[in-house]
Length: 322
Image 1 (tube, rainbow, N blue to C red):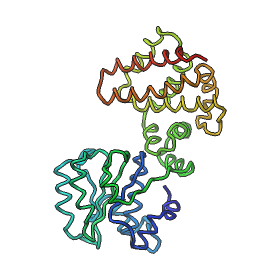
Image 2 (cartoon, one colour; image 1 turned 180 degrees about the vertical axis):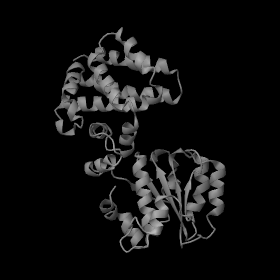
Image 3 (cartoon, one colour; image 1 turned 180 degrees about the horizontal axis):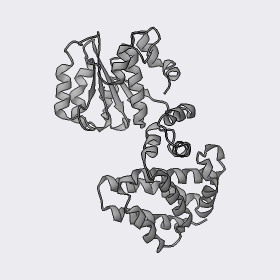
Image 4 (cartoon, one colour; image 1 turned 135 degrees about the vertical axis):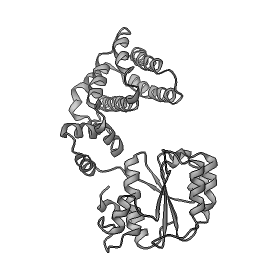
C-alpha cells in the first residue's frame, strides 16, 4: 500500500487528530499487507515530520528496522504467541514508555491464539493505560472472540491495486515473466505473489497443472501424475492455490465472464479445460479442495491424499459430463 492510499484512510486521519482507539484489529488474509499497514500506522504515530509518515526521520527508521524501544512486537520467537510471552506482555503494559508518550504492542498471527489466551488479554483491552496501544493482526476473523472484537476498531484491509502490487514485486528484482505470472495467479495478495516468486518450481507447477487438467482422462494416468505430486509435499498448498485459480478462470471463460479472467496468457489452455469439464464438474472440483485441505491439516497419509485428489477429478468429470 502506497502512502497516498494510506493517507486517505480513516485510521490515518484519526492518528493525526489524536482520536485513534487504543486497540486496533487489522484484518486481511494477506500477511504482507498486514505488515505494511501496521508499519504505516506505527510510523505515523511516532513520526516527527510535518508530513507523516516521512520514512526518513529517526523514528521512522527505527520502526523500519524494528529497533524502536516503545514498539514491542510479539511473539518474541516462533509464529504463535505463547503463554509466557503473553504474561510478559501483560506485566509491561503499565510500565511507562522509555522515549515517547506512547507504547505500542503489535501481536502477529492473533488468529492462532486460543480462546483462553484471548480472554487473558481481554481485561487489558477493556481498560488499557493511556499510553498503551494494541495492534492485532488477524487473518481469520471468525476465530477471534466477540468480546475481543467489541473492544477493537476493526479495519478490513483493501487489496493492493494492480500498479502498487507490480511496483512491490518489481522491487524484488525478479524476471518480468515471473512477476507477471505471479500477479495473475495471486488473486491480489502480495504475500501469495512473493511466495510464488520465491518458489523455484512455481512456473513448472503452473505448467504441470495446466497439462494435468487438459490431459487427465483415464485412471491409469493417475499413477504418472501422482508420482510427480508425491515429491511436492512442501509445495502442495501453493499447488492447490494454483489449481483453484485455473479452475476459477476456466469457469469464468465457460460463463462468458472474460473480464474476470486474470490468466490472460493461458486463454487457450483455459478454453481447452472449459470444453473438457462441465460447469457442475468444475464446481465440485473446487469444493473437493476443501476436503483435501482438511485432510492435510489432520496430517493424513500424504500419498493417499494425492491419490484421492486425482481420482476425484476423474470422478467429477465423469459424474457430470459435458
